[in-house]
Length: 411
Length: 102
Ligand SMILES: Cc1cc2nc3c(=O)[nH]c(=O)nc-3n(C[C@H](O)[C@H](O)[C@H](O)COP(=O)(O)OP(=O)(O)OC[C@H]3O[C@@H](n4cnc5c(N)ncnc54)[C@H](O)[C@@H]3O)c2cc1C
Image 1 (cartoon, chains in turn yellow, cyan):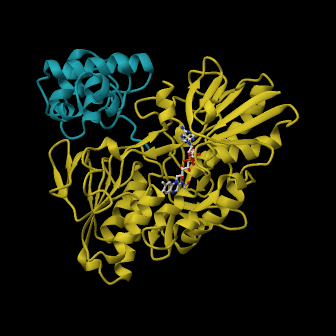
Image 2 (image 1 turned 180 degrees about the vertical axis):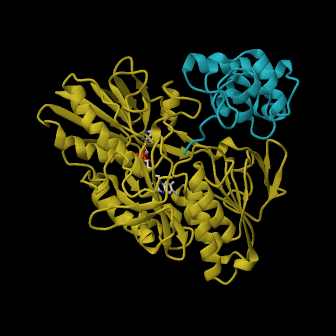
Image 3 (image 1 turned 180 degrees about the horizontal axis):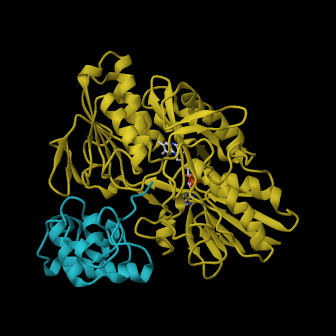
């Protein structure tokens, strides 16, 4: 029996397990998935919890229900990866698992401890995150009775998973406070380390305009050094201060601790990965999928999906002794909620920035690109159903893995 | 721009596109354009470390990596290269604009 081990049973780990049981001869292969958490969280849903649109139950499902019957599932923290011995140590029962091939899909998570002051007295009192289910729920409780004031949304450091989530949060907050007839009592500020509203110029311009229309103040090049919980202010390395009544923080995102313990990561515990093949840079029988890579592609579920598509085809070639093809192009496809039942869609890759146009999707689309529309909002809402029922199960999605220029307007 | 007079390839924003063409004189000129001249020993510590790191790893290091391993911490990086240290360091060290993540 050949052994394939998948570390992490989140979005990428679940998708790849479902695809592999169809591609590999299961009489010859043993596939094991290890994850520390029994619950699968639909993370894109976290965005809607603070505004009461989703509750916690809407975003939680048992992991086992989404993993194929043919794979062994072990719920345990992973203690150590030993790539030189082709084995992994688990915390539970001190087990050691050997592997022939390893897939690392341990994702990324927020580390508020990286910013001094963030987790002191005001944490979960006037400082919240919405990147964890508990943070999103706590923020929902806070907002229900909040009388208004200055809401500062701060991104601590790039990269973050779902880089459009901060903008979506602000657009939804604007709509939420309008609906509650208190928008005039809320000042919205977006403090970002980026030099514009988004990383890509054309989209940055469009989204920047939208911020202005919605009266959301943009503070760029703000690199947070610390939080002063007594003065209720965030402080930057170049001594700017922004006071807040409510701070919504997107703390530093890092890869899993086990990557650091195993000495396999960069300064943020992301695993150095070959940009176009998804093979670990330093190991020939290890592949990295999803948020765990150090690649300059977006950390998003859609990207993980395109990666899995590309990986499966390549892995089959690899097993047959053929070389890996450089087929991953950094493709990302994200719906952006803009409030009041409307949304944007952006589609881009390593080389092509998000462009305006129409996005063809057989049976459902077309969706307008880089432009607000109601259809795009429905695309996002439908995404939850699609996520659980199509995406995770590894079924065919009507979007090719490589980005296409069809429908995009080029200058 | 001063650096236009040098015979090195620059992109539209004044970043060098071929780090192998770099010389210490270029760093001094970039520093003038960035308003941080003259370069001190502490600036050089950063520039030299970054060039070494980029050459050995093939990638321009992140600000976090620089502050962790160059011997100059984040606070001081902002003092030496105020307002956007990553871009100023990249210019002085003769590297293309660091790709913000997406
Ligand atoms: C607020 C928010 C909104 C988002 N919105 C969108 C969106 O609209 N569209 C989109 O495409 N994406 C969105 N995303 C991003 C998307 O959820 C992630 O990119 C995706 O889930 C990444 O998948 P992954 O498999 O790499 O990591 P995860 O799904 O996070 O899985 C990692 C798994 O590894 C396990 N693990 C980690 N370390 C260990 C260890 N040491 N031992 C055992 N187990 C371990 C974890 O328990 C987890 O189950 C959003 C994310 C957030 C937070």
